[in-house]
Length: 195
Image 1: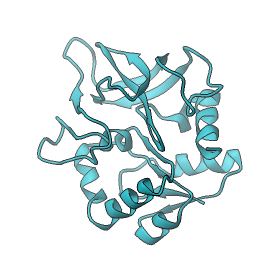
Image 2 (image 1 turned 30 degrees about the horizontal axis):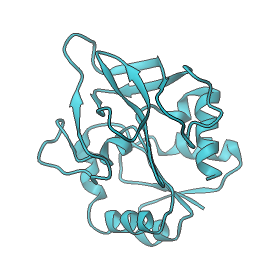
Image 3 (image 1 turned 180 degrees about the vertical axis):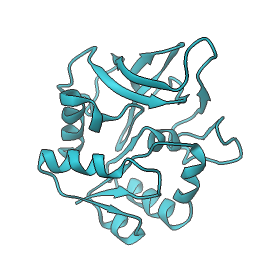
Image 4 (image 1 turned 90 degrees about the horizontal axis):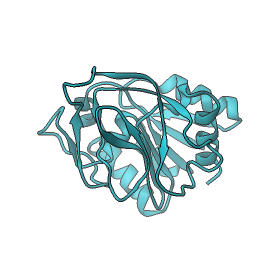
């Protein structure tokens, strides 16, 4: 069963509908015990980085325990940003720190938030992006961006390069919304489910 972590950051139902469409069972939950028992974990989210404060305590402990047991974890949009050290959006709040770096606001030379379709630039081979067409367009909606790091497997250009997808061992993150990205997004979610 796939646990979709409910920390009141929205976008849960559309993620669950995408899994249902693909034929995979999922549950929306804030119960740490269900998260510990899950075969896969998804942390979706839209909105302000402050919302990730709800991922502290027993929820974070359950997620970290699952990571140590090699359970696949996928962070989507705000969920991906939480996997990094912190964000300029809420400087006093710490992220999970799975990936090094700080999420930064887009420069003033471009309109923010970055909303709409933009092109993925694949950087490395990736289990998550297997059979996702090269240079395909996916759907973004965010005001802060994740830096390019050693775990970046796909980038995007908008006011400079940023990480569109990261991958290390059993931990994955995407800045875009695969559940709103048509066939490329569904392929990505299928790949995650089949890990």
